[in-house]
Length: 213
Image 1 (cartoon, one colour):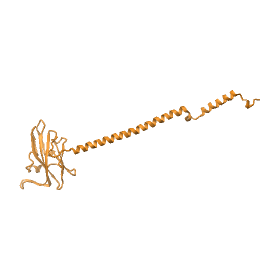
Image 2 (cartoon, helix red, strand yellow; image 1 turned 90 degrees about the vertical axis):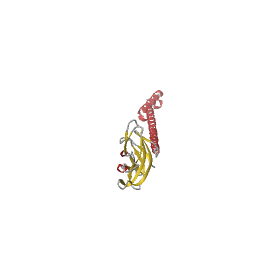
Image 3 (cartoon, helix red, strand yellow; image 1 turned 45 degrees about the vertical axis):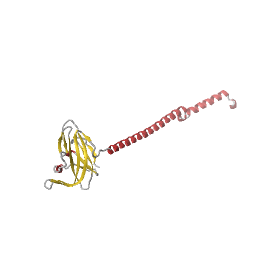
Image 4 (cartoon, one colour; image 1 turned 135 degrees about the vertical axis):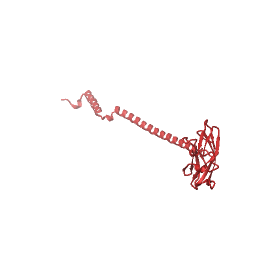
């Protein structure tokens, strides 16, 4: 009979090695080093990507905000650069110079041949020069005026017929290099104030605004 205390050392060592190998084989997969390292690596990559994405969004937001601010500043600068009185402005073939504005006119013409304003007439004086290479008609109806409330007004062409100051601004053909001097009449509410006028060389042009203040 063999005593357990007299077990062969080599056999005991072999049994211990076998037990260790079995325990290692039975260890959960998530505790094994060969699985832990790739998982950690993937986690690091994901964290880095999230951080970069967040930084990119922040950068894009900053760029978008900066672009918006620049656009707003440019628009404000353009508005502040709106031409004023006695400053030539160009639209198409015409160069316009607004020389003055007078409001509070109640009627034009004479008692026999004239017209009374519904509210008040505002007379806008201007010079129109044809800087193109062909004759071009100046039409009063192509022009617009605006008050402080943003309301749009068209010229009162019927009153302009009786206004001696209107001159050729009502309707006339201007040859290249020539200019005319006249005025436009706008019938606006009493107490209102014209703040700007939009001038066009034709009904289809973009127009150019001039401040009347």
